[in-house]
Length: 331
Image (tube, rainbow, N blue to C red; front, side):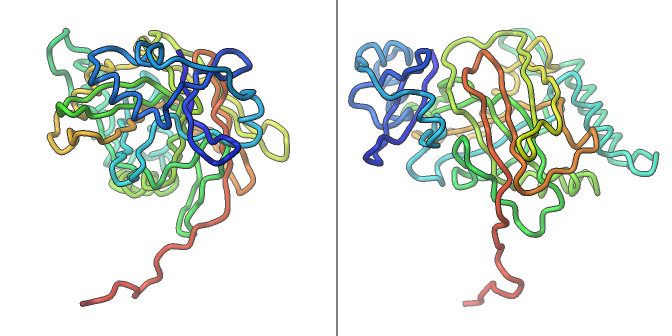
């Protein structure tokens, strides 16, 4: 089952099930979060909750995409209660891409030793036996729900940014139940969107490079994730494909199990606040930046993977003005 959130013609919110070219609207449901919390209270799965509420014929899916009426497939009405985070160096090819980023004039920066060490730890201990904790992955914070743009929308880029680069990834979408336990609602395609030039200057700038807008969706896939997934990441400029490359994901292509990545995120008590939403990016091994591509305003990103339905498309938009220097006021 694949779920979407969308705006109807009256501007209201609805939840739908994608069935081919059409959408079945879930009865009496405004948000995926509401649906998930009801399923948790009912001690059953999301599909069972949808079946209990029933559905009715809805709009044409292609029209929703064209009119950009799709919303992120899971969110929170208060963006401060939606945490966006991620893990890096999780895929078997990720160290190679990161290595290219940290090469400067033929020399490896001192920080690269730490990068390769963490990657090696993942290879050796990222897939522990069931019930055990494995190697801790790299972890980063991106922001709250206010930095998420809807499918089809442009990413605002601050004027201090040195790069506007895509990162095609899978995301895990979660809700914290009233019992304080995390529940995985499903998975979605994601574009983590980072500043790779800034990160390349020094690996300690990774935290800064991640504080950018991002997108995920348009569909939320409910249920088990295939072990091998192969998709395509594209950059389109002036209507033509500028760059295209396959990206691999799923546990067969990762050095960490998903369960291990989830454990090392939700082991922190501050991430278990009832009702909160978490969107976690699982990492990638494919970057156009590693191939020397320089994006520019007007470019559009397209991330597609058959198992997730419609592709995730976003563009590079106008700059967002930051707070001016000296505008912090003393009380």
